[in-house]
Each structure stands twice: as structure tokens, then as C-alpha cells.
Length: 261
Image (tube, helix red, strand yellow):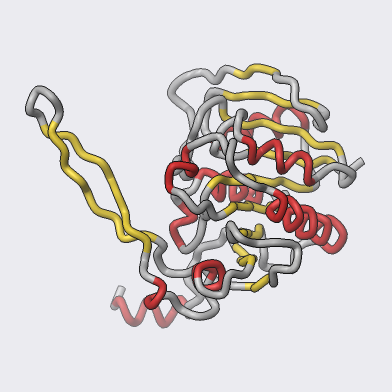
């Protein structure tokens, strides 16, 4: 029987992970291991300085489900140690889009990347949200029907056909106004999604504290063919192939000559 792992970075209580489980029904045995708490923007962080705690939870549509007090990457490692090799790993459905080279910051994408390093075909899937407050919530007001439709469509294709050589995972982003007739665009990563900065505030005792904040790159700066252009301008579902070998495709002898080393 096909074994499918589902994880996320929004936490075990997110409606997005429950939507993912629902979308995958009939494709195989579904196992869930997800963080106990919100872990957005955790990247490939791993818990190595303290023990991990795991709690088995009831989740309809799964063979087994665990909440882990660690990071998304920890969840993948725990799942493989507990249940063995999987045929497919799904990370999501995330609340808020994960696009551009900044996917390396995303706990959602990083969990899929971790699974890919274990030679498991992987899909990270995120749903654009129309209001900023929804990105760190549990998704109570979010409609997941389109994201579920595209997750099942892509997951079925990967299970039936596998990923092409040189592709380790797929990063999928679904516009908030998508429906079953929305087109799919195969894209490359945009350079940046946000322009980050630091906002200084003052606490009641007069001491400064700081928030990392960011403004999204304006639409006029987006390049055609990128994931951000597809979602933000064309209103299409973006599917971006990811290779975890980040070695630059250059002639190494030419590099040596250029650096004079």
C-alpha cells in the first residue's frame, strides 16, 4: 500500500493540514506528523539541544497522527524513524503563499526539502490568503476547496508518473480566488518575495525592541515565468520544480581561473 506523509509548519491544529488529509483520501495510507505549535519561518532548523516530545492525536482519515514539540524538519525525521520509508511527502496546505528563493526560510518548503533529501518525492503546497492575519492563524475562515483539488491532482500525477530526473520536489502555490478551472503554470522561483526591514518600537519601560517586517515586491517588478508572476499577476496556480543540489551550474575549471586560486 502507498504510504503518504503529511506535515506542515502551521501546527497540528491548522485546518490546512486537515484539508490536505482529506484531499489525499483514496491515494494511500496517510500518516501525519506535525508541530504542536506554529512554526512558520523556521526554515531547516532542527532540534538537537533538547529532547523531543511527541503526542499521538486522533485525526480522521489517517493511519496514525502525532504532534511533535519540534520543527517541521524534526517531524519528517521522526516520521521516518517511526514509520519507515514513504512513497510521497506532502507539506501543507500552508496558510499564506511560499514563493521565490525565500522558500529556504519557509518551514513548509523546508519539510518537503528534508523529505526530498531522504529520496522521497515531495510536494510543498501553500494557499495565498487575502488577509495578513490569516497567515499565523489556524485557517478557520479559509476556503480550501481549490487547494485540495490541486493537491490531489498533483499528488496523483507524482504517484503515477514519479518526478522527472533532476527534480526532487514541487513547490505549489494556489491563488486565494482559484477554482477547479484555474490554469496551472510551470514556473521558476522569483528572486525575492519581500523587501525586509527592521521596525523599532518602545516598550512601556522605554526600552527599544524590534520586529522584522517586510513589504511584498510590487507587481510591476515581477518577472514573467516566475512563481510570483503566475500567482500575483496571472492568477494561476504555480508549480515550481526544485532541485536540492544548489551547486551553481558553472564550469569549475573556469571558476578556478576566474578566482585565480
